[in-house]
Length: 136
Image 1: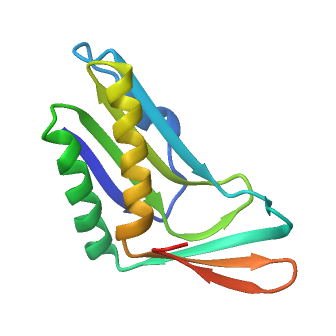
Image 2: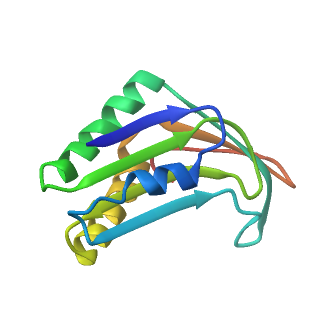
């Protein structure tokens, strides 16, 4: 089973986490990407994410399918719209028979999501607006 989607409301971390707990899996790894205030010396006030939703969900599902084919469970949710400091922008979770598989595949998913899924961000920083996306 997998859950892959783009949402425009706050991500329900607790519910998504609980959905990854299964009797057959001993390892669950979760990555949360939050809006942070500082990136080195750049101070961010907020971020706005936009996407081509159907394309993004298809690309996310392709990534999830890689992990599903290995017999694991996957949850990938990315939020779009205007997010404030501390908001969760992305939730990636992997359930696997063992922790090493869960860690490895969770990291692969977030790394590949950032490189292949058409989601763009507009960062509102203290000094100017910056655009980021696929290859940041």
